[in-house]
Structure formats: C-alpha cells, structure tokens
Image 1 (spheres, rainbow, N blue to C red):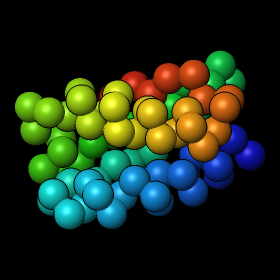
Image 2: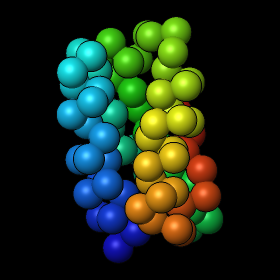
Image 3: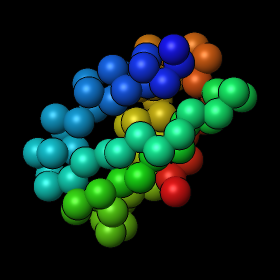
Image 4: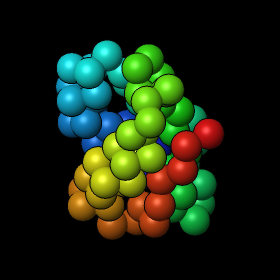
Length: 74
C-alpha cells in the first residue's frame, strides 16, 4: 500500500521534472520507509540532481506520506 501512495505522490512531482526533460522512476520502497528512485532523462545526468532529489522529491514525499523516511537515488 505504501508503494501505491508513493507512486501517486510522484505523479505530482513528474510535471516539473518533465518540463526540464527529465523524469523519475520508482524502483522500490523498503519496509523502513526508504524510497529508491532512478532519475531519468535530463535529470539523470544533471549536476543539480542531488538537489532535485532531496529538496524536491524527498521533501514532497515526506510532506504527503509521513511513513517515508528518506529518498535515495539508485
């Protein structure tokens, strides 16, 4: 159920990533609340990808889903 919540929340973030030529792919959600994602397109090689991951994606997921503890790029 947590995975479905995360996927739904990522749909809110995707338009911003797509506007810059990128996207995010959900890889896994652990029982400990760690979300593993893969940044694709322009986001995959962007020097600001860490900022996007932590200040954009992770912040939004934590805001919408309290069970999320962190977001990691794989």
